Length: 207
Length: 304
Image (cartoon, rainbow over all chains, first blue to last red; front, top):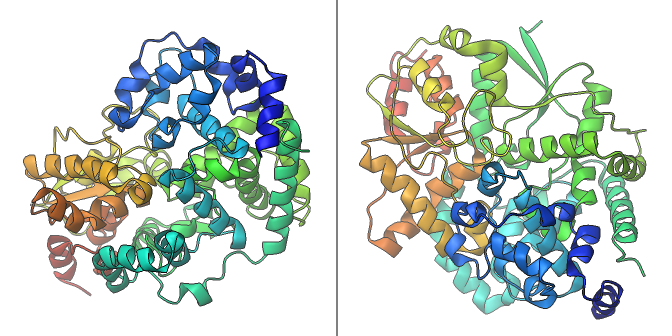
């Protein structure tokens, strides 16, 4: 990953905006931002962003590549779409933030321990495995991702919620074994592999 | 033949013993009374949800949604696709929109889809709709009122619309800042909607309830507090993520903030299932973590 990062930085030397336009989902919209700040003021987790969206847009134009891509900021997006519907220039801000986070993640620059990055990765791998989300495996995987001891502590802290869900029959304690997922798992795996190949080629991730 | 037929995309959280299985139970009861037939898309897969972006990227997410839609085009010809889950609807509809406006992405999507076999090809023939849209636009409030046999009179509901059935697409004719459809649905079944529920479209934190619990629970606290402030006895919502987040973390919020929240959080379809004469079980009320006692009482009244 480090090599791809160096290659990208070289290719777009001093022009981070061009890099974003070429490789980030909906990146071609970034230059349309007029710095009004409605997005930042509309974000439910606004205060938690080190650099709110409006600032991210300006930083991209200012070529502050490392600061943007290594930031925890985009990982605060809850996908509430407030920014999208309020942006006077109708920029697809939510998608751009997702795109930036994904790009940073693929380049290996995203903060390693960011909890949302780690959860998002687990979530995708979980759904891609059988074609459908296996909720018990996802939750358990989340608790135990830092080892057995922390896992037990986390599971204990969440036990009331787990018991509540079990009682309400909204959690399958045997889901590890009984979760079926899609019938055509192989087809889905082939399809996703192909999609990843195409995207990697288009975005320059392919070797 | 049923009055209306749709190609149904239930989504992961609707399966048996999953987080929104009670939603599914109530939707089945509601649709039966409304004579609406849901034809499940065979072997449907996950939409990737919003949080799928980080690892899934762009094309793989669209391909997942396109597979469902392509199967639907093949099997449930001429029917609109309807989703009950807000995230499923959003994901599928986003894909439809993007592929309609980007011919390169469409070609790439179909290239990947070919690998899935079944001669799948996404054409974009069918509309992608949320269950609420179908109820309001295809049936209409008047029709939705007809099967009501029990009024939910005396219960005050905070209509919590949340994000993803509201933005970025929303329900036609509704505003993003103050959508009214949920309040109207409450009125139809005889309940009393909270007029000025100021946290109606506040985000519950979505998937970040798992990864950033403190930040999400601060959001959830506002949503519940405002419901109490306006005298609501229950919250009602159209979204499985909203429902779960707002219902199940109340214990943790109470510990964190010293509050005494114990607010039931229901689905619009549960209200309708009860008002249409269904039992508590038909309405999936046995699937509440915080029991909706008042609804249970009404459901028990004159039970068949």
